[in-house]
Image (cartoon, rainbow, N blue to C red; front, side, top):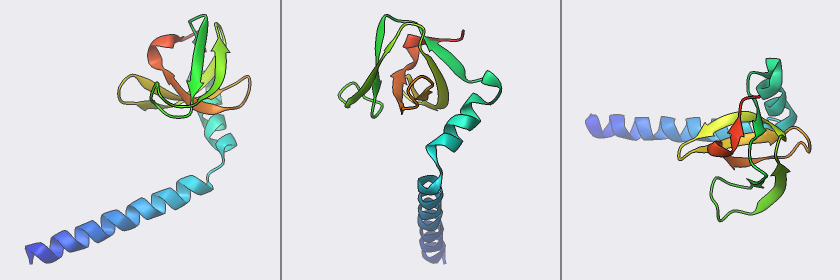
Length: 105
């Protein structure tokens, strides 16, 4: 019985992951950014002379854009390890920044 329960649990977890991926993939980036910016609660500014907006939360990832001091970003998620998933308000690009390089305006 316990073995059957584990199998059922694994199947349900797999289906939930597939449903999430399908839903996430169908969600537009504009919707994500609009939700993040609503009310300005998640809008921060770059507080360093030059910061790389990266394709993933690692210093070895592709640089998507350079953001200068004062550039505004909407934080869409907090990632473990000191990273933020952001939407650059100037260019509309989504990427990742180290949290230590942004402050609340």
